[in-house]
Image (cartoon, one colour):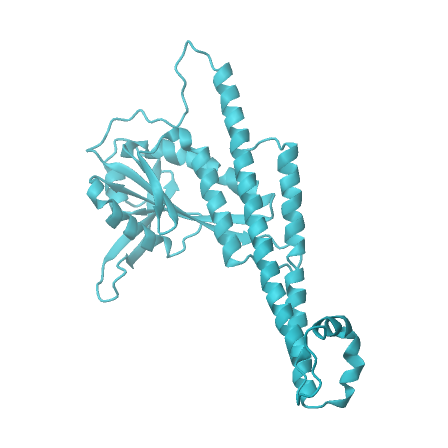
Length: 324
């Protein structure tokens, strides 16, 4: 969902870009620590030509010598101390930059929520009161044997490399961006009012009380996910998804079904709507069909290696199935 940037968002984005650039200096401290330890080792071996590189360590050496003087000892540990201090500074610098970067992301999310809230308030203010509001996300089909629609999604986050030597995202950064993607998705589909939502093993799931809602859900979730991809591309982040759809009739079976769907996510089908056999059976019983299903194969969906639980899984496709 697009929004007009305000001054606060622009400042936060600029600050985030500055922090991304400043991150490079952590490697300067790590590299300086490395060469300090290397030269200390070579100095212990009494290599003659080391004096040519004294200029690299003059400043730090004088600082260290204010509290450490090597006179009267067999080995001079000044360079080792410089290396250790550089290493500690590098880790502290890295921690502070990551902390600030995460804080900037949180502030951006809060500002985005305020923008979205203002937009929703304006929409409500101009909405006619004579007719009931419709979201386009509601289903008019009748409930089918109390089956419920279940959806789970796993975003995949990568940095868009502008140059060949661009650094990859750290694990911490990947997790932060995944949280932002999930929050944006929840904001964009909040008006669909899922019966239940939450996280199963860090993956977002949604459950709707009427399985017949599936066609409307698919109709609106596709452009929603595409808009999120475009939105995060502006930040230099590439987003792709793995997602699975299923059906359940008993709430007591929710965790078991989510566990099965989580296993399917691990197969890493990217940007395909993968569905379970339970979903196919329930969907085939609908009076009308907007989607067909293509068999992807049979997979062992048991996490216990000693137990085989082969089940067919399918990929949703537009149009009618052929040959069935």
